[in-house]
Image 1 (tube, rainbow over the protein chains, first blue to last red):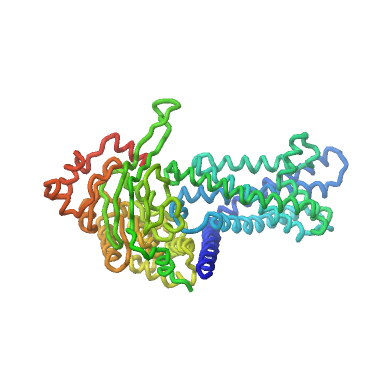
Image 2 (cartoon, rainbow over the protein chains, first blue to last red; image 1 turned 90 degrees about the vertical axis):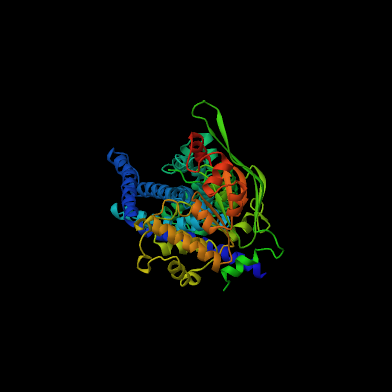
Length: 277
Length: 285
């Protein structure tokens, strides 16, 4: 019993160490992060301005609602970028610094190592998403009288479990290709969102894409967050979103760990952990 | 509070296993052959290496670049999977019992790899968390261990990128010792250091030998370092361990006056002489 508690304690301390390290690094690179945030704001504004552009062409519609709809899509896109970015850095950054061998030879389970990385990514990503949403909403003076922001945050947090599972799968790519693996990870982000109705309803997609949308957690995340912010829906009415999100999360996390383990074994067999360059 | 040393020692079996037991260990690497399209080249980095180390013993492995020294260290650190043979640390297999091995082993390599924007204290703190040590447990221990390796206290908060190679290597030693390893793997820890830093690091290794209950495997291509620090010296050449004996016995066996001559007699080539094949092997191994 004492040994079990000791192991559990060590695992939690190890996961906390990953969070601690990421906090240090975020502080050290804070100005780069601010610059990156400005880029994200600019990018988000260009997307939301599309609604204004359509309005100027004379089409009549609820422009405030459409702008909010687009803003949610852009914020979720940016959030997913942060999440996948952090998880891919699990390998890519450590490989660059040469610390990966020290991390991988430490007696911490890979699950807790990646959990630490995931927890920091979610906290950092949510804080950034809230700021991004707030800045853009203020810029356009968007009105959201019915919004249930708490429900939206809960949906985002629940969806993050699935996103982390998928992110873990993509984070293995820099182990296989140190040069191009990170870029390949963004393909997963783009593919996930294109079938999930990031800036449009899923119903406008071709049939086969609509079929794929059913398996994407981003579909349910976007529907849930839009329902909460635009229609003011509470969590009690979000079973159709939260249920599938939990189910996909329950599958994607173990699957992600399994894929990562395969990648780690491949790297150890072929000597890919060694720093080069 | 769980004492780190106590926790590590719990993983050491009570029965009298050898500290390190390597049997017919083999590792080969395959890479694309840039000269022949679609084909792969295979290089044997370790070819049937066998040896044992007793608890508390220091063994030096001598070899040129590409001889397989780093591959051996990586295999013992669970960073590579062998293609044949076996390796055990205090009876724990490095493949099937990797978690147990990791609790017993730490390593210092030729490159003192750190997060460059983080300070020495932050890097050590982060590394120790992976071994289950909380910030409360390391608050006093980190300054203490940095002082032991001769790291200036006023530079503890400086980013690693501002420190010299010698300083970084001292922090690397501190990182390895912080986790109280019972087997310490040193992979060319003094390569590229200026003479003063080199002497300081060697002095510290001597101190570990006398004060710390560690078994040390030192891979080096510094003959004097091998002779002065180790009880037995091995010659690793092109992945094959040709000899492993006390330095005096090595000299006697090859009828040599110096270790360099013994190396020449064992391998048929000068210690510093490296051909194209060695360069090629270095990329793999």
